[in-house]
Length: 199
Image (cartoon, rainbow, N blue to C red; front, side, top):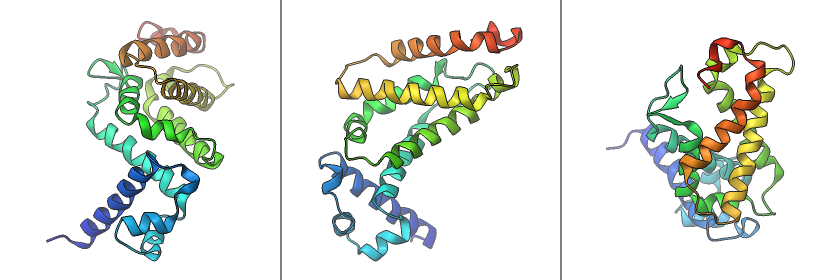
């Protein structure tokens, strides 16, 4: 028997999955909250218990699939920033590949800019959180390290956009190595010598 927390989680995931299934096959502007709720077997009132609006469920659907990828990713080595010998960029690219149509639909013209900004802010925060060893070695006051994370998040988001829109059949390992090289070469001059051999 489910407890209340289980039922909440089940209902939340049901709404996320229902929205996802609609989103990958329907233009964003044609999806209504009533449609999401009805397909999920509930009312609009139930929907608003979990989400503020359609933008909110879109953003939280992105988060849901990101967290799923994160839970399936091997533990990150705090020194090398690698998980099972691979960068987090590799796992991010594999997540995009597994959910290609969802990501492709994220770049529709009708997607509100506020959703894109929330995703970019989240990516910047995740980059900041996972880069602690680099932050400790960062030796300049300006620009602050958050600028590095914002730059990387924007660059990665545009990389994803180009890969999914062009329907590229990419090799996640090769692309992640390219991205890492581009990012770290630029960072070298801002870091103390203790980490340069590791990046």
